[in-house]
Amino acid sequence: MSHGAGQVLEFAAMKPIVIILMLIVVPSLFLLTSFASAQEVEITAEPSHHLALENAYVRAFKVEVAPHAATLMHRHRHDYIFVTLGDAHISNEVQGNAPVDAMLFDGDTRFAPGNFAHIARNLADTPFRNVTIELLQDEKMRSAPAHWDKDSGEETFNGGQRKILFVKDGVRVSQIELSAKMAMPKDEHVRPRLLVAVSDFELGQNSDGRESPGKDLKAGDMWWSDGPLAVTNASAGPAKFVLLEF
Image 1: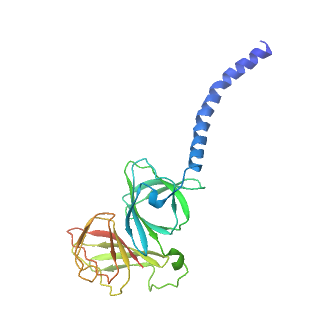
Image 2: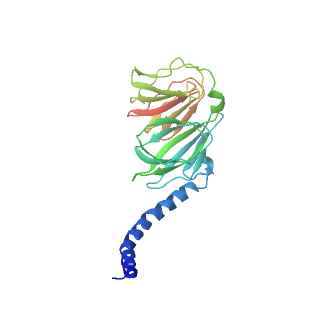
Image 3: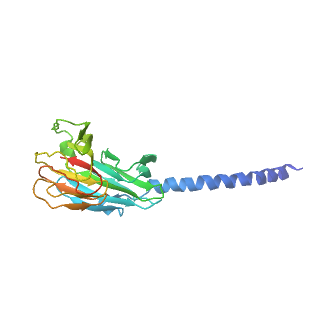
């Protein structure tokens, strides 16, 4: 066999390997390039984020990402807290970093420092839902002196229990479970508070100590109060919610 014929046979043998490598490498490079070049939008322009509440303290969004879909690359300019609604499996793809796989559970409540952009990709067969609460006074409150007598721990009271999860930017965040027709111990301190429902329940009358009407809350609904605290679960089943105190 001539040298030229050997080279032809050698190339022919390598051709399937080259094709396979191209099928693997080219799509991977395309995905990396697409991720790196994703256009960033403000959180208010991201279609999966729906503004639900805004005041001097917070800007809160109801977030829903369809199964196997993803948000746009969007920027968080403030520190924020998010409350997961239902179990979830996502890929957190922060701009400039490798994607991070995350398993979240119903009621999972976490804090994230702001000033970054990311894509939240839903890897599950069910919608990814959460409530994202931006802390608008984060810059001022990061260096503010602590003003809570308790910033961690659990307590049980008649008809329920409370777990203080953390204090960030001066905001104390607790997870509370309340039995049917029961009330939290009344807190006479007047301060802003945000309640985020994790389960469906009926918020009883006068829950802010100011003769407020009752309210039917679905998971993900929010209730803002700037008075005393006297939360009552008026429904026939247990209530689960997250409470932010400022």
